[in-house]
Amino acid sequence: MSDTCLVPVKVVVADDAWDIAQATNYQNEVARIDLDLARYLRPQLARRAAARLGYAIEAEGESTASAVLSTIYQSKVDYEELRLLYLGLFSRKPNNVFEANYTELRGDVLSCLYQQAESEEQVFSVLLLILKHSRSALDYCQQHFDSEEYASVFQRFFKPDKPVYRAYLVVAAVCASARDDISVRSAVTEEETGRMRTFLGKCRDILENRPQEFLKTYAYSFAVIADSLLDVAGGKDTGDIQQTMHQKVKNMAFDGVYRRVLLRVDASHV
Image (cartoon, rainbow, N blue to C red; front, side):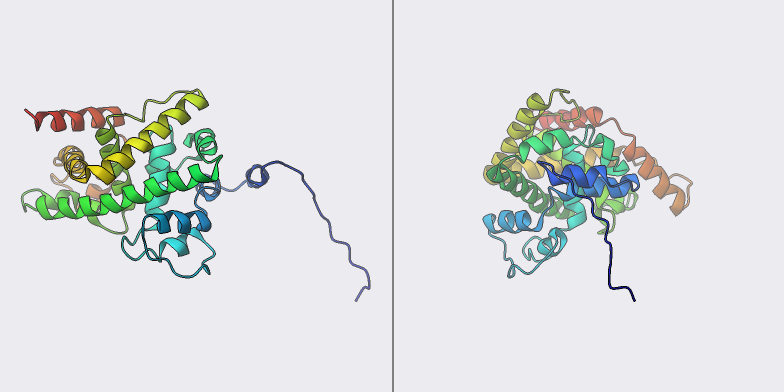
């Protein structure tokens, strides 16, 4: 055994340690998107935002955002659903919930939104609020869209292991509620950051003060997406149905979904 030991060390000085983490990570795209989102899904932030919403949180012993979220008893918020919601709201197109392509994530906008500690908590709080109300809205849809003539086609929306469909659905619902199609993005970081601050503020106002309005819009969003899938089941086996459904929803033009939901919302006022 040698009395001397040489340990190679690389020292890098930077204003933002996350830049180093990104630059030295060359894993696949799924791992990269998780790396990009990790800076925004922090356990301390999850705990503060949840406490602000009045959720029961255990002592500060949890080391990951996932562990913290698992202690939010009242809503049982799932980490994967929150991760997908980030992708749906902060990617160039909401359809990135299906692809999880890190190059589509508007990290520039998220970075600007998270520059101040207060803004970090506000963003996280709104996202938790969205998930809380979307759970109730999904239960409502499951109870009311239950006819044996069509319900079996979109049962995947309700399965706990298929959160990607629910993430896409809730993004469609919040966009229609706020009447803002976030799939139409500004390339200018400052403009898009301001737009998203306004958008999240509208979402908070609707969910806190007019939750029934969101519930109805969510139901219309469900109906629009489900309606496009009613012809999927004809003459196909279960595997083909699932694959066709996935491709069809993934390839939907979000702006078209958005306009069709608004059409149903406006028609309900006639």
